[in-house]
Length: 209
Image 1 (cartoon, one colour):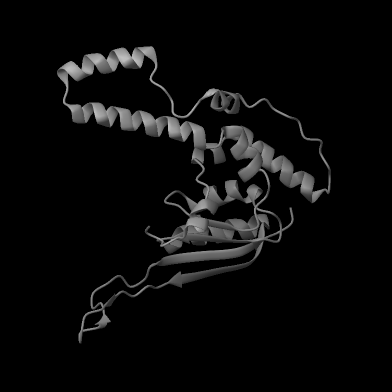
Image 2: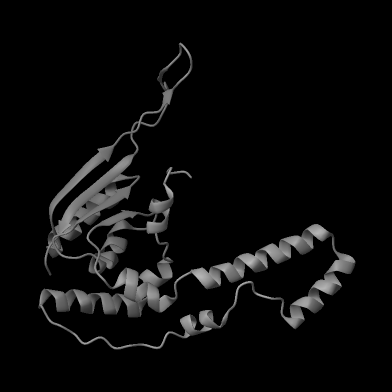
């Protein structure tokens, strides 16, 4: 709702936990994919068993109460308010809904991470240099990237690192500025007191490794 996205746009967005992205095995696979694409090698894929997917298939909807859950609810109803029981059931329902709908770790790797992306947008509170260098293997060669930071100095360090390692071209540093307006009848004007800038951007194009 914050970004005023439509249903189709929201469905296109996939949320991936950073633990999947920066996992050592995933990073190793991404670098191997990057190296193979640079050498135009065709690697035969190995099929891994997806234990989480098999567990998801065993679930049914609606998920009926298990015996130990029924016993727990019978005890709770005698000592706790009805609202707490309802909260417990709604949280249980949400937990099983997530299990049935969210992708597994292997699906995240094969569908979202290992196929190299055609662009990279990075806005993080962590060190932009380390984060970008770890994310570059997931970006296809000759594709653009943009890094946002509230401060200029971390992006200058990232700029130099990319230049020294010859990882990107067309590198540019720029600042952003967003000005809020007060919109009232007969009193529409820019906000008088606000921050001088909205942050900084580092843009570039990834070089073929």
